[in-house]
Image 1 (cartoon, chains in turn brown, purple):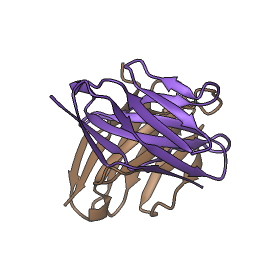
Image 2: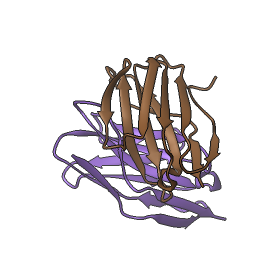
Image 3: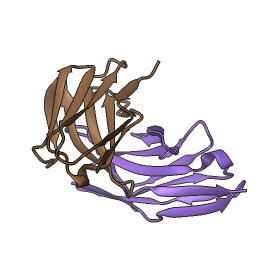
Amino acid sequence: DTAVSQTPKYLVTQMGNDKSIKCEQNLGHDTMYWYKQDSKKFLKIMFSYNNKELIINETVPNRFSPKSPDKAHLNLHINSLELGDSAVYFCASSQERSDRREQYFGPGTRLTVT
Amino acid sequence: AQSVTQLDSQVPVFEEAPVELRCNYSSSVSVYLFWYVQYPNQGLQLLLKYLSGSTLVESINGFEAEFNKSQTSFHLRKPSVHISDTAEYFCAVSPLRGAQKLVFGQGTRLTINP
């Protein structure tokens, strides 16, 4: 069984559209994240949620709105897509009160804005 | 704030040769250290981590990394590489306290030639 899953795997859309990416984890973790990997492979955190509460918001444009309906899901909605939003978006999860501290990543969603 | 520098963007080596991927970090607080690996068109997988204790940590597939606090380094090594080790390797840090977030280096592309 996949630990952290994302849908869709690929997303091609036009500028100005609104799109969503979904993430689910079955690890029982209480914290979930969204990371963005740009064309140069650089990874940067965007958001993190702990028990459905927003913990980290790293100066991401307001067009990006994460939503966590429950501890196992963290979705990312993007309004008015721009060319610069093209990237691979990774979801991850971890257990905050843990001595393991490792984050488990999903397979990524490659977003292409044309 | 934390930052991570991976000194080599690309490292080509021949199969069965040794390899070292360099990582230095900067942080005003104590951090945990990680190496993640990204195989082509896949998500990130944890390779190894340093949380505390012995400064030399090992992975199940022959990689090792040594935490050097005085030099703020966490270099990754393998004595003999295999074709299947071809991947992108990311060094990352996470603060000991506060919200968990991974701060990544730029990545090192390891290419193994036969």
